[in-house]
Image (cartoon, one colour):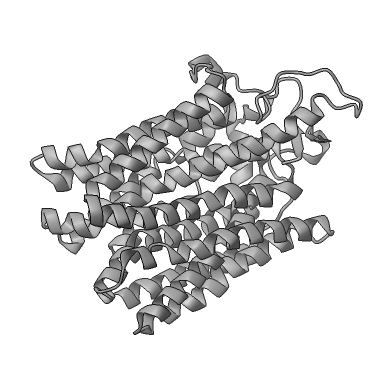
Length: 446
């Protein structure tokens, strides 16, 4: 986070939202002031991603209890869980498009306030609607719509502000918030579920998310109105004016197509595991404690995510080829993790199942320094919108494919291997969104 990237005269404000400052003795404006604020923003984005997953995973944690209360079948349960991802895919491109033009911080703020309120309101919809299955499906679909802009906004911010040698650590640090959030809601949520009922999980995670959005608006954005106007969408700076010909040229690049396919596979397998693992453990090991299998895998994932970011940035700083480093990280994420996913097919003991799931999720985090960062290597000027094309279009199909747990784990392995082979064969790290002769990006040390 010590290196920021500038884009010329019409560049959007720095991530730390500082106005121009008088040059200090080092010759760089506001050098000493920006470092601590950059760290504050990193922590804030980490916490925001944590709360995002607290709200997102609330339903998988409570799905078994809600299914018992409302007499849902596995098919009904799958429809409720899967509806989130069908909503999620619709706002991916839109979130990145808007973020590239008006600033990711505004999009993050507005969306967090909305999905936080929706999470807190979920129990009300469940109890006061005559058909809970339909109200919950609609609520999860709307949650997906609102949360779909989060990662494209982060990708837009990162690509515009941080150079490639720092992106791995930033994205893995902020990305580890997803595992921290799943860890927190897995532990605290399981206890609240047992003590106060499933409703409490939604109330607490939703209200905390709204509080985070308020604090971000009040103390970091200094109370400035997060208003997105049509004028701002149409005049987002030179890096946002992308013609149809530009996009067609972009999507003709084999490296871009490889990132799309790989990210699609990664997201599909990850969210399938995220949604169904609590039900898998409840069905296979009914006497197991929820706080154990909802906590341990994510406790392993957090240091693994941070380690992958540090490792990738270290290798790049030592002169290793960026594309080779991205491929190495993705090999661990999709290749090695698939071995432990397959081992779940024949697992008969609870400790072994927890161990295999923990290793699987830990290795999966390496994608934060692989394909997730590669899109910013290829096209930083439009990373937000491009990232949106890459997510979870097929996750709904995978979630409903639950004829047996072994078949689900085998399917996840196959999808992982397809994505890995594609990425290893075609991935690159050179910029493809501008002509090399017209590059206008330059980096400033702070």
